[in-house]
Image (tube, rainbow, N blue to C red; front, side, top):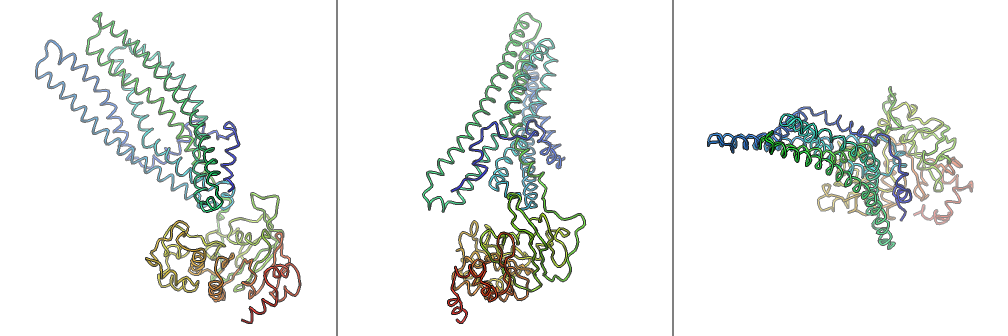
Length: 612
């Protein structure tokens, strides 16, 4: 089985070649996260208040220890002094506990709420993008961004930022209190801060360069997993388990190698910072102990200084780790921001025209030339002109790659042609809101696409207001009523991932019934009966014949027997119309259609089939 293009590319490219947007080299992309967080000012305010309260309580604990040592253990201590000292300390502990509970709840609430909003915005934007975007961007890799990257951002909002702010406030408050206790010792402590900041800056520049690559490698794992699991039948049918296991091992090891580099840098950075910071504090404590021995500082003061210094050291040490997490969050945010910043190439004009009412169902292609964005060297359609009159049934036939399916893509305005005009009821498609165009069309694709939902929701996907009575009428028209009645829970039966609990023919008949419920004036049938057995095909074809009587219908077919009664058969080759007429006319011409027909049946067998 062929590998996902992006996974394959990642497997051959060195890590240094992985392009990294400029925005991922700083914390700038986190502005997107802050904008989403700022939508909830009440929760942010409560979280900040709780953070400030817990940080103040943390600093207050060493202050109370200083008072306890100087007063409660001093020569003038009595029961009342001791009781007051420990009573205040207990109150501080209670405030710290309550404040921590509030901080945890509201910060976690913000994390969950923000990531939910981000996921919704990304998915909403993805739904606006045309198929061309997903030709050059793997849906599996995008799905990985929606899971792994959003999980990182959730950690950033729900944990990392909280830890960063708490430690920042604690560090600032702690330094202020240290100045109050011993200005000379604190000045020496602050002089050593640049020795900590400079390593953070140097290691941080190395770390942020690898953060983006690390996330890409995680996305590769998700993409590879989704691809293989989605094609498990093919993998096992061709005995390719060992091959896929080896391929996945390569992707995992590449991710592990990238992660090791990131972990190594963070480990070294943390070690250097802790050694420098705590080493400096030990030196200061040494000096403080000498001052206590000399009588210039009290025992309570040095005890408070030691406890506060430890808290400040821990706060600065945590900030170094937090910085690395913030850089990972920035990398994840930049990847999601790329999806949010994508703009659809196909969009409604500022002042869209209104399609005529009532709908007539006339569709015309006028000198249309079109090339797919990923295949610009080849024209899928070249100077193509075709008019389908209201109520007419036109069959599109031709060899693979002739451009048949491209007509449907353009008719629904998933793409715009590079030249020429496509009109619906006389109005150019580029002048109309794409949603209005698609509202007038019902599509039955070559393979019935079902969702992981019950039968009812799959049937009414194109018309959510359809009643059960209408659903059963559509099911009868598509020859689907029989097996739907036999489902364990009827229309409420869950059909499985992609309709896995149904056969291919059953899935196709549900897709046909869904198109019936759409009640659109234009019907697009892309090999609609290709997955049916002979008996079901005949019954469904009869239902489609009745359905097509009141609709404009375009039918793509390889099995020519299914389109012999079309009002007109258009034969395409290399993006052009090479023949047009009825079945009898085209057989008589002896051109491409006749050759295609000869490959499927001879005229005597076909005549016998018609007599029957």
